[in-house]
Image (cartoon, rainbow, N blue to C red; front, side, top):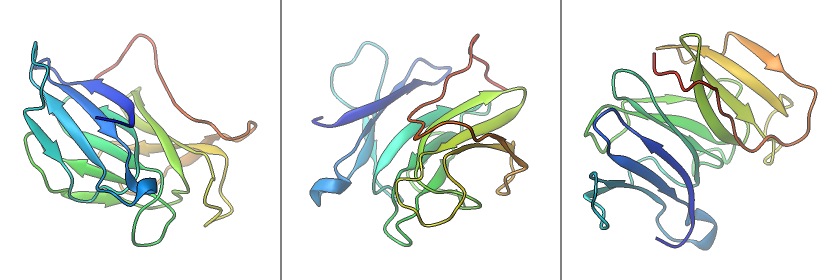
Length: 157
């Protein structure tokens, strides 16, 4: 693990760590560690290019914010079901350089840092109803280059 930049825990105590190697022409991944272990149990690579932010919902679905993706360069959010290595859904609506994810009030929040300038919608925090691939609204757009999100107390829908 050489470029760890995000961490999240699931309800079973597994630790997920994003390792961002895309900028170095290597395969980026999310390493999954079982509780108390120092070596990864498995690595998620499919759909990942430049993982920046991680979040897990109450169903155990892992959300990964790809700052940049290999297809458009604009970034996306990949969703992985519990213990699955392939994404089952990709969110691209209004996404432009996502760096952070969090849950609050039964919704997923994502920040657009706008580092890629693929779309005009940056910097901004987007709100997604759970299960939706469409942003419901821009919640905050008065700051420059957000790089992470958190909600306290931590909420798992």
